[in-house]
Image: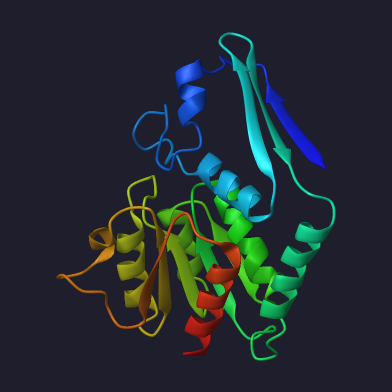
Length: 213
């Protein structure tokens, strides 16, 4: 099975295409992209037994094609997710707020959480996340990227969240050094770090264990 997405934009040079799947490689200005979108897609597709190809020409646009197996491996991956979601304690037992400015990454995380039976809330940056945190919504876990735009990074969001909800559990999702989210050289109680890129089932297990802890 294959899925192709094309645009008619400026296109990419051969040098850019060669590096497109590298974590944190981006041609966008600072603050406008993390360089993790394509690397997350590449990791997810590889874990599913498929592969990704990029065809691009400067001035003509780009086509990204995802190839996924139809049977065996795809069915096994689906079965693994079902095993993870089979925990009755997780079904409908928690609400998770996900903050990430990369829409694709946020979508993948939300999909994993909903497969586990959790309710989800979403925000694309710190200020929007704080609006949710200031609401009356029940939130059991905050999952936030560290590198967020619009004036607040993930650590600042977490600190503000803890002022509003002192017992809130926080999971940082980051590709940066862990020191970027530490406070006074250590991670506060009720906080964890998950490093990008990550394997989805391993991430699901971490979330389940953290919520139940």
